[in-house]
Length: 372
Ligand code: V47
Image (cartoon, rainbow, N blue to C red; front, side, top):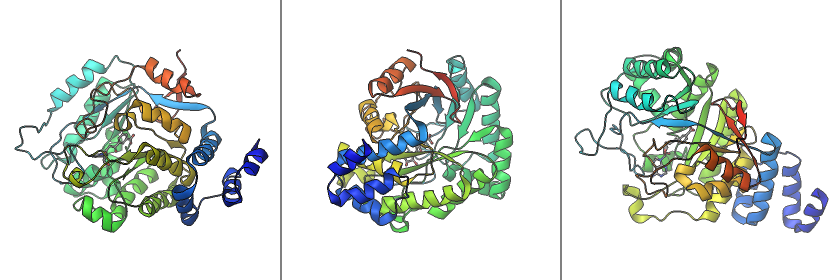
């Protein structure tokens, strides 16, 4: 099969495909040539082979919900439709009691993960976030708390006058068991300065994740693509993540986040990238990040059908059921206005793409194999 496939390819792609199929590492130049010039179906095939080396026929999902404590943010990122100033009528800032009530309505839903991310709020301090995590854990001891982007973490820890090591240790002691991948955007310094000048450097983002990994806290990584960056910037971003992962092994999953253009200042002069470009991006991520176990197709951002299609381009994780608990993407114009999926719908999407659904916990331990 493999021989026939390689024979069928033109000489042009035979050597690179052979190297990738034997598990050789893709370098930046090979990656650029592949993603810009290779036929889409070849990219899909190579990425699926790489996915199957990591996770066979399994495709993971979890039962989760988000808490977005506030959309008030001290930073003003060009691509963000979510952040509001403190005096905006569209701003929210839930009290701990309101957050507890959100958890109470979902505590018996079977969720195994609570994902907490919000704006970088000017007034709240580390002690407030410790209390928040503790009260979520007290109400749902069976669920893992995956909380706060590296940007939120740096801000609350610096404000408390602590080192990263001390601040992360305190949050871990309060019950923070994993860290989501947000805030990475694009690592290239020049692009980063244009789209999120106040957010801190790429090195600052990487340092938070490095320290978390050192403390045994697993994390995810993201990349915001499809705006003013080029394929070379995307490859540079993947390369910096791959280097950190070689060092620590602490990333669980990578999540490419497609830029959505509604209701944010950057969208005025830009259109969104095509489905074909999304699939090329997925395949590139699977092939380049050979040391990151999982690649997530985040359906609230892509829409359900595009997320399902991503399973043919190397993704092996569909994130979770969400239960209509996040606004970041619907505010930016994503298709899923009310992001919610039943486990049945999730499993049907995975099965009809030819894979075996596996409900997982935050750490990718199987909770159950298939309900249908
Ligand atoms: O960092 C903001 C992105 C991220 C837009 O770790 C936008 O499991 C597209 O990181 N268009 C936050 N993207 C969300 C995030 C995340 C989501 C799901 C799962 C996980 C995980 C992490 O959302 C931000 C930014 O890159 N974002 N605005 C926009 N207009």
